[in-house]
Amino acid sequence: MEYKHIEQSRLPACTLDGILFNKIWEIFNQDGEFLWHAAVGTGDDLLGKKEERSTRTVQSLEELITLAKTLPHIDQLSLTIEVPDKGTMALALKNFVPISGKIIVTGQNEEWVNERFDACFALFTDRKKDFNTLLYTRLGFGIVQTAIPLSSMFVIVMVAAGLLIPTEIRHSQWLWWITAATVVITLRLAYTVSDKLILYCMANYPYIKWQEQ
Image 1 (tube, rainbow, N blue to C red):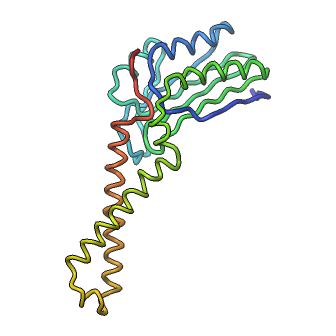
Image 2 (tube, rainbow, N blue to C red; image 1 turned 30 degrees about the horizontal axis):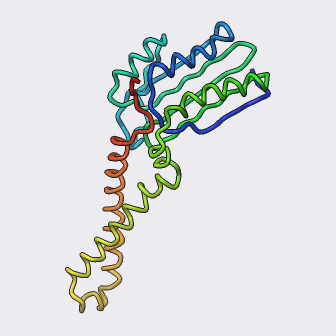
Image 3 (cartoon, rainbow, N blue to C red; image 1 turned 90 degrees about the horizontal axis):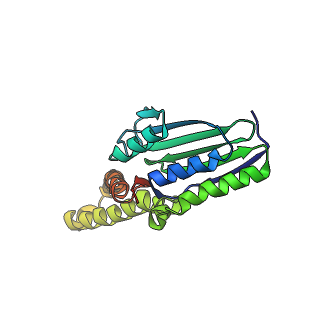
């Protein structure tokens, strides 16, 4: 069924807890019975290199909370709620590269959409982690993933080359080979450092984390 109105936004990095999910249920319980589907990612590939990711579908709110609480790392979380003849709410949180979070509310009535969107979005912003959210913006993550590894490895490789390779060799016909080698070494080291830096950030500043109040 197609709906006329839509509200959507990026979700911030935040902590999750049982209170949040119970409040989401309270928001939609106002409309009576509703259909829902939820899946929780149980993998540990923080770099997002695996094409197939393990997920577990839950059958009850209690199971959803219990599973999220017991996992050492929530790989991803998706939740869809549909209120027949009124609208839907869908949210998705990815706790692996590329890190993201989004909420979408659609419906026939604009007021219903706005009210449900504002109420649900506020639950996540109340648990927002400002630094983590900034870290996983395009600019913030670009600095972690590319700028820091490349610039630091460039300096290290250039200094090492200057100290280890004699001046007469650097100014000889070997210059182009030395340049090519330093570029390859810089890129290879930057790639390794980038992965390690991302893993450090994900371990210490996750996009989503279960934390009981």
